[in-house]
Image (tube, rainbow, N blue to C red; front, side, top):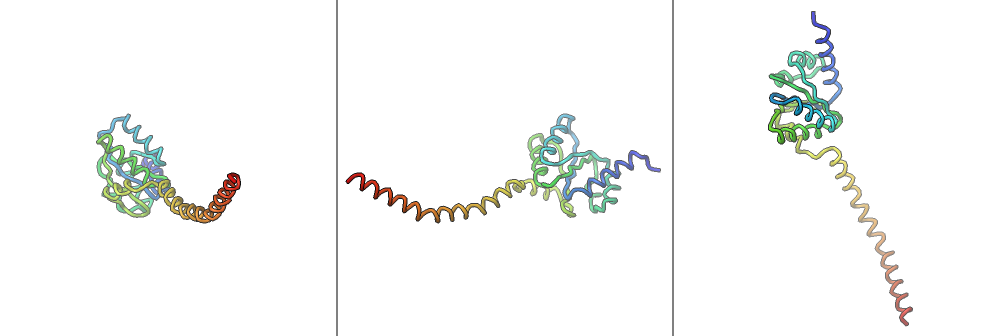
Length: 173
């Protein structure tokens, strides 16, 4: 019979796997407690949560959640970074941490029912964040409006300049 704490851990992992569309699996060997805390804080700032899992329990939870293909990634020490709404921010945080500390290894991930290799997660990390993309779209929409406003105010501006010149001529005469 399974121990209650293991059953609870499997249920918690399965619930987190079901509740998010994106998560990354990492090998955290070589991280000190301080570095792990730093990584957790960076991920939390990007809307993600890092949890160390036992591979056996994670396999059972993945099967319960209906997630296929994670067995290949569940080898060695494993932590799962569960992403919130933005899948790019946590990927950037992970690869930024790897670049800075030269520790940690991304095994792969899962994005909207699709298994990702390490290279796919790295490509995600190079994409602009959600906020940057929204800003670009808004800027792209606003630019023609500013141009239109300039074109529409052109004749009025010309009239004002002409009237000002007439005023100056009359003042000089």
